[in-house]
Image (cartoon, helix red, strand yellow):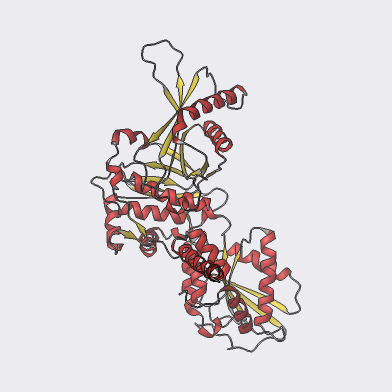
Length: 180
Length: 346
């Protein structure tokens, strides 16, 4: 149970579960609240964790999407995410993992350079979103995006799979593969 | 027939040569625009910076002349290029600026108690404060007070000093036309009101824009590494860091002081490429400090914000305040600050 695998459990009926991993508890809570406020045909479940691996004695539903939250103001959150990434199975990275970077708006407080998280997202071939959850105007659109991504990853949107979404997002970012 | 051929061939030839020139002489801004147009992504590669060395130009500098720049706290601003500024008109500018300051003070905008002085403004160039020959000359503005006392030695008291410089500002120089003078770094020492007045005059006269230059934690850690890497004959001060812990109701400050020789020893063990500093070395240097602190106090300094760095070479605060302590590495410190200023203008 130390490594998260995408398909090791049965899916719940009309349920979509997202796991938010990050060191900033208040931030994750705000994001979770915004997501749960959205209207959604499926039943949403949001799990919050400081880091992986998750304790194995819990009975939890199948996780459809993992978002790793990095706070650009704190190097500690970046290290934490890098450590946690080791406990995720490789098949998760086929569209069911994303990165969220917060705090880019306040440039004077940043200890982590933007290019570091961009490179991290590129290494893991996963989408990267930027968000400042303290500002309402930014938080709501990001929550809506996450809910939509979650529905697709849980298979609740007919005709689109997580892998389809990933290749759609990737082709708009970089057509060439020579960056790394 | 011939004319038709030449018309057909020359545009293509000139277009391809123009394209070649475009890529050879492309500035970072142009490269970025090009990558956006081609829809490739532009990830800035991690910078490798040179450790500040004693530059040749600095040797010509008379240490006495620039001694007044050291050991003073300067507030940093970034400045866009000045339009139609000429180094031959400095006397004219000093006249105009003194008149402006006198007018402002009469308006009652600047509040200073008990001043009956006459204000005198001087503009002067600082020779030798440049990185390459292409950089614009640095110049100094000082507000002096002329004392009314009829005594023999009428010393002019310096009320406010500000100086403009450009050290290794090639990336900016390439993008501007000839009417503009690029001096992106502005340092001010003295009353805030005077800085505001001088700033307003410059903005009106030369159509430029000042903005305060804040230094974020990422750049402060680079400064700490680069200044620790400088070879010093004797260390005047301990290497000190100050972190601010974001917690309510009041933020907590953590101060960490290391003996400068220990810091240099740590840096030497981390440093691999001679003469250059890389991102990995900076990260490793800071991580060593963080893990040492964590081992003793169980506090993760990497989750806090670095606010102040102080070494024997210079000390910098995140609000954009700097104090340079060592004459040898003055140009090196200013070069990095110029880079930050240019980045902010861009």
